[in-house]
Image (spheres, rainbow, N blue to C red):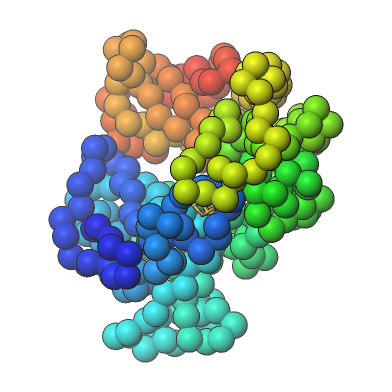
Length: 328
Ligand code: SF4
């Protein structure tokens, strides 16, 4: 399915690289205008696909062998889909409709997809913290197919820098969201994106970023050096950070992120986790490979061919980026 700035075309054949996993676009565009990002100017305003079209696509994927879907959008939390053909009560009523009673919310869409027979796992990306609803936090507990993993880009730990980025949340508000998520789903894996060296970032601001990284204890993080995007407001911000300062902070951040990832992975040694087995590892044909619900990469031994199956794996070793184990 492709999109233009003001419309959505349905019914085009889906392409996918993996037999058991598929990505499903649920919305296009973005209304957030983060000051460093070009997406709102190039992809237009937010448009949500109809939930019935998404449901049909997911059912077709499952019929074709898919076990795990990842719902995609720049800001999936602001999904608002319209039911056009079905009776709203039949579609799930209050469980799936938002407070207006007119639109299916993102949590509602997950509830609808959770009912698809044969589907094992639902994931989504990306969530904007300012739109993370209590309803979605509850869905982690009430929809058993929704994987216990959220990618929640924090970008900076400094409220001052978050304001310059136009992110519309503070460090404290982000920490509150994390607390709420963990209260409902204690074992939820939380991953993030962080930008280092945004214009005006001081050493104190960067320390705030290190502080939030430690306080949250992210399972992993994509870390980026800020670079100017032509046509964005931040292009003209004063106080661009010197390259060598950015690199020095970046290295310190990566070290901290990796230390915590390794610690989180180490805590899984001795535990049995459920893995969607994707087949033989590309680097070691003696092992199978797959991911946990928390999206951790696991390479494991199995006595039989477990390709395309949900497998219980005892974790025996860990490293910064992966786990090793054996099927039990
Ligand atoms: S960073 Fe994400 S939320 Fe912000 S404007 Fe870009 S696409 Fe939208």
